[in-house]
Length: 173
Image 1 (tube, rainbow, N blue to C red):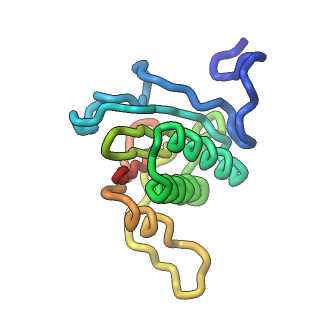
Image 2 (cartoon, helix red, strand yellow):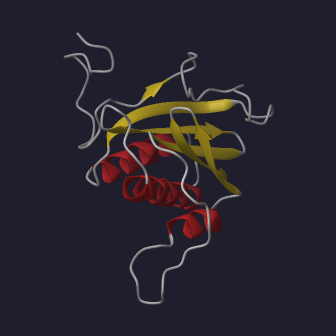
């Protein structure tokens, strides 16, 4: 069986997901794990997950449902969970509209649920775009994703690397 594919005994994931969420603390490229440089040392993960989604709009609801389920299992209060799901939706939608899929046609989604904060990451395979204020005119339906994510988060960063760009948002729990 090929790595990254669910075993026949695994329940199917939400539509649009090419891999079920999995807990991880193993080192790998662009790994999302406690103690990685750039994470505050005070963070002790209650739950860490990564998933791979198709670089298609239909993947957004499945990723949002997977995060919502993880937040509920971790006992995150409903208002903070709703904010986190909205931020994930905006970061993933932004990557779909402005980013570049990875070589396999996917995007990476990861989160870390700690005692005092939530960290959400969306990774694509392209260079970082311009991080600027939205230019949407009143009445336009798009162009406000990063602005909305910033309004709900303590920080939102676009982090370029050799193999793509990571959009990382940190929210209070």
